[in-house]
Image (tube, rainbow, N blue to C red):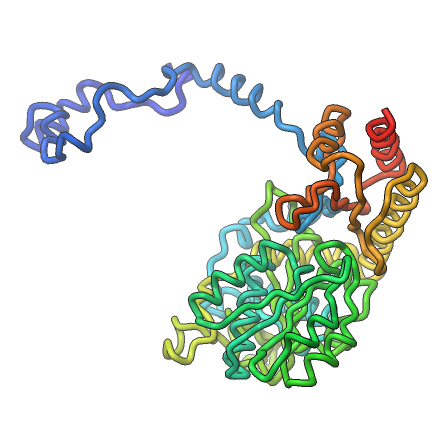
Length: 450
């Protein structure tokens, strides 16, 4: 019996003893207070129980039908990417002292967790060129909305401008938060693959709290942050930049180009795709906004003996301070995933991260050139990092279906969010080999000309 079923139900004798203790005669009597109209009539429409070994075999067979990045080369990005994760990452975050750690309210027993968060904050500041970073947030999408709220509170203005080249899901979450916070969101149109600066100039006014752009943007193109900052400064609006942390290993840090708040998602560094989550957001600002930053900040100090130590320094949320003074209702951080990113960055080192970013840039450039050779049009006019748009003679959905039959997971169909049914957003990370890229191009050539 124990070899067949791992979890044994109550025996008939167990049930009778419990009913006797309760002073009732049947299980039916136990539920007699529930109205008949909400009670289930008959049996649930589920399969009968089977022995556990048979069940495990069946579930493995069903799971094997899924096609994922371990089986097929994947050219799908759009916010979640297939990047190399050093094996030490999973080994370290699986240690019980990190895996089961809770919020480090008691610093005397949480020094390891606090130091891990402190190192994460430090690395984020180095990448972004900002003064202060918090202990992490849920993901890059919610970080962006929190940044907008901070800008509205700080400037006491009622509108934010967001480029349509910002991730569609970020914009959707921004709109949801704005409705609750009662400020307006206006979207700025595109000039092909980047923010239309003339439109931005027309829309910005004295009511604009912030201008929000992505760097590189949703299409992989690199926005001109210097020019956008100049436009923002004409009315005193803040500049919020959502930046890919891996790309920052190559690009000029947004903090050096005038950004007031830099946020983003750490998924490219040490966090697996996992069907889209969980991720880890980062949030960094200049020192003057430190006390308005959402979530928590870990600080470095010394104890009575002069030894280095770490504490929760700032917690500007409603659980710790007056509700009307709270910057956010964020009640948690993503410490385990933040740790994964920290370990990944440490394992790669400064040169390793830069090399990894360069591979993304070079391989995307190689694939774009190969696609041009077979007659495909690359829509990006600005330099791009590891994603770009290709125009197809067929709807992207049809092309993706055909690619999948050939063992390739294609790119992102831009029809749903931008109405560009014949355009595909292709991501090329350091994981993609020359052979995989050439295979994609050859299959696409056969689809286009076959």
